[in-house]
Image 1: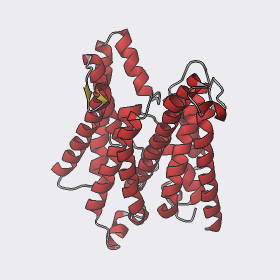
Image 2: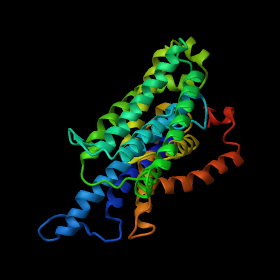
Image 3: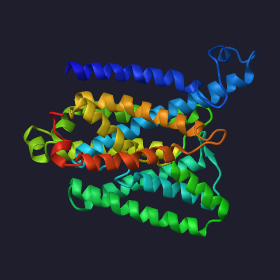
Image 4: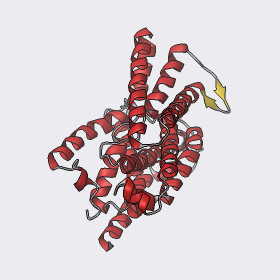
Amino acid sequence: MSNRRFLLGSLILLTLGTLCITPFVGTQAIAPGMIISDNTHPLEFDIFWRLRVPRTCMAFLAGMALSVSGMAFQAMFRNPLATPFTLGVAGGASLGSALCIRLGLAFTLLGIGSHVLCAFGGALLTILLVYSLTRVRQGFSCATLLLAGVAISFFSSSLILFIQYLCGFVDSYRIMRWLMGELAITGYAGIKNLLPFVVIGCGILLCLTRELNLLISGEEIAASRGVDLKRIKKLLFLATSLMVGGVVALCGPIGFVGMMVPHICRLCFGADHRLLTPAVLLFGGSFLTLCDTLARTLIAPAEMPVGVITALLGGPFFLWLLMGGGLKQGGFFDSKQ
């Protein structure tokens, strides 16, 4: 336990270092003295405070939300392959965004653009559909929840392909680019919109660490220990889905983060969610921040969507898990790790 606490302390230092250093990394070198006054160094001041700092904050928030949502889904479904996009929320948000681009919608509501509103509306519609389908079966079983989410995800993907086929070259490219997932934001409006979802969702999951520990042991054991399975599943479903919906609406579907980060943290910190949850939050935010820094500097002056970087890392990581036996159900959720 002391070794794991030391690792957690090291992770906190890594997180602080990542947040302090990555805004200065880029094609145009920025020294700390350049960001103090916008009169002496106006260009560097704008680049730092209006581009790099908001982008770093957005990457950290999105990484936290995707990582902790993946951890919650893996525990709820007892499936090491579960990701934040398992229940089709990303597919619904992507469909809303594709429709917005195809229809040429351009409006603003409460300072939020049409693209973000349509994507978040698609995510909310998916959440309602999945929830309604599980209620039709007069229960809230994980199997029904999973099947409903997968079915809606496939249907959304089919509609997106149909919309792309009807689009011209420019709109088709915009849809494809958005589907790759990117964090190219300007200013702090997006952060203000995403922050409530992340804070509330992460707070709920931090309060449910005991229930998550019991869920990975099996629903029968959890029920015998006094866990209200139906209520806990609904709470986990809503908290994680709203977080994922907010992230996807603003950043697009950034894949593999929610699968990789919980695996890595579980190998280092064990399966106890009392320690695992804060570790996943910190490492998830740092991981996506570093990936985004790599995405905007690797082929500079051009920028690469961060989803490309996470996918390039996620494929080999998945093969490593497969070859190392990390996907075995018993070993994966072994609390003695």
